[in-house]
Image (cartoon, rainbow, N blue to C red):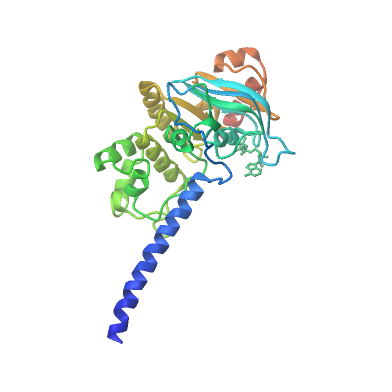
Length: 300
Ligand code: ATP
């Protein structure tokens, strides 16, 4: 019995490790929503990254081609600036971010990064230049430190702490039983939606890519924490001249953007502009803003 139990124990631990790595793979796939239909073109070259200007040129796309979500959409996201995409629920804001990461290919038109069609560059080089904070972040069944380090595996503990501070999650982490070594994820400690969002933001700040996309990244936070965090993020992005795109319903987080793009019914509803410009135009954005202010009045 003894002789048998040793190899069985050994097999048991191999099995557990294998299972853990499969779970990690699963999380990773969920994280990136990998679409295997999108592949490198045989002639694909690495992206020649300059400043990170993004152009949508007459883009039409639908998850099912007979139901287009974006219809002949064109706009430019300038390099080194903060752009916001706003519009009613379901109008295709997250879809734009997915297309930028090339989870899907457009049905017609093209998407350019620094003048290069993203179908002509390698997926690896395209995705390396981008960091995304998705609406719902998957966490690994591992320590908080590991979860943040997923942004950049070779980061030091000090670097992890520095980004956690900027993402306003450090004090919360320190209040956990094992601090940065606390296990989170499905089989670890349960953490709140807002804590998860701040871990996702720490992760992307650690990766420090030249282009950053935030999809409702602070939606679970209270107003006070959201404002403090957004001001930290904005100053980092400004200081480093990063190209950023924010999708948000709470317009207070984006009204300081260099440019706001308003989507409606699958098209760009009005010429993009700053908050002041769009309020003066008195179009769709000013109506959304009016509704937003009204909803705040109701909340208080
Ligand atoms: P919200 O503000 O509610 O997050 P959104 O503007 O980001 O919405 P998208 O998530 O881009 O909207 O979705 C646009 C449309 O595409 C919706 O009608 C949605 O149901 C549909 N859609 C999104 N993902 C898929 C998918 N994987 N397969 C099929 N349809 C999808």
